[in-house]
Image (tube, chains in turn green, yellow):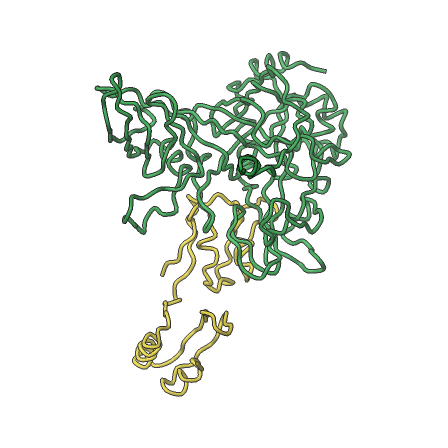
Length: 398
Length: 119
């Protein structure tokens, strides 16, 4: 029908037709798949949701005399320093750490995500480092303040983003639970879902046919890339006939230059009783290379389901109350065991739409070109549990 | 402890219970509207504080920082009165102040600390 190169020619000449996933679904409902596929070149999808498996690489530049950093804190949040001398990795969900006896009231609810947000917003951040003294790296410690303009590299490398579908959390027990989905009230007091459903990028390309390693994506206002399969990538999840998975499935590792990102799309967040995380806006363009692309993108909320999972049983495999579709979830009420339960999203549907609109505008203005994938994403990864604990110790017993 | 009874009997203060969360052997929470003479009101507050009851003035109200809110909607799931809701079309957060009972459950729920109480 049309190649990615042809689509890029249209983008460069300002002739491209871009629809958001929602616009495409509405068009398909009126003019049908075939006519829609003939008219649209690119379908844009977007999401804005907590993605705690995110983090930033930083390279500080060397001090004089030089230092080999082995322990480091940024605004009190520890960063990993066990590699290059002044290379750091700051994890989004690492909580702030205080020295012994220090117990400030302010800032307890901060973490790596907030520090990343501060740096992207152009604010300066306090850095405290302890070095491992060697003949070539004689400095023992270092304190300074850094900003994104005073360090060499500052890029996000997020090992697990863009979950293809997820679960719905509820609490069937009798005490309140603080979870990564926020507070879950007892006796099925509320239900929290965390996917945009039919808006969600990877549910519009369920088989990851259009995406691969090297695909250019929109990462918090910058041009980023799919770096690898995400951790816990599980494409073999059970699927409906429309190929959307019935629970958490594919994931992607994303990389992008944080110096180019916009602070409004990178927000540190904190879940009471659970910890800090990072909310990120991610947009994914899907090239309409054939009618099958449009057929997949036409999927509706009522055709995508997620399992209702009971968090009151703190096990890896928790009991479920069956499946529910996203049209029901977005209505604000679902029925579980005959009881009406309030639903709330954790994915910002309003900001997910804004991400799609921002990406659409960039493509229309010729500032964002699509890219061919360098290699496909694996479609056969299984999900391995860690059940063999204690084996080595037991074998060493006499 | 019959608090509302003693407020009425000894301080002539009427207590209109808006919300009550009370259970045996647990710390409970009452949201009450108190009506009475201003001096007797002060005495009533002092009396309650002398019983180790945490009294916080609830003529405060919830305020939402529009610049911080990301419209995730997490707060709408814990709001008991539906004062916080997502618009069914735009999915932007809406706050119906008249329905809010200032239970404050939304305050710690908000992941970006966009909700606070103010006078």
